[in-house]
Length: 115
Length: 112
Image (cartoon, rainbow over all chains, first blue to last red):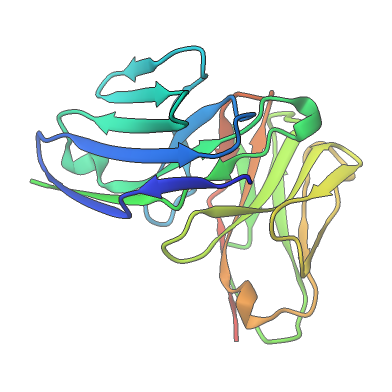
């Protein structure tokens, strides 16, 4: 099963608050877990990514937490800003040339940051 | 640096018509992908290619065809368009496995 499940579907947070998005996967062969940010009318763009050999990765206000045993990973957006209002997708893939490096995406979370 | 370019941006097709969605990238990436995104949903893989001359089916290939004659271009062909193919289509490319995927701006297709 190649599914990646993402929650919640939507999220409203006040400016300065923390946004938390969760994802769960089933395929234990996945070994690359990126998060993509998408603004209306645009293609997704890479935000941050993690490999399963680390439990946490931080880039500015964005942090990925990874729990290999639970097959779950999450995105935390600290000090959320109105400019962070977008749709966020988690994804997973197997980093194998033979597997085609195909990304399997979660269903997306629409985040609205209120000023 | 253009990145991944998709044309057209918008298109309305009648049921049964055919069309080709164009995708070209100037980053010399071997890996290219076509995804569709239905309203409020995630992206589903239609077809992918790991290099010129090599293509394979993704999760939802029915009703579509692709070709990859050059590294730069990866067109997606819709034969006999159906309302179920109304969606936003994204092309993406990757240099190496486990690195950033670059997406085009998308093609919004409506089949009526």
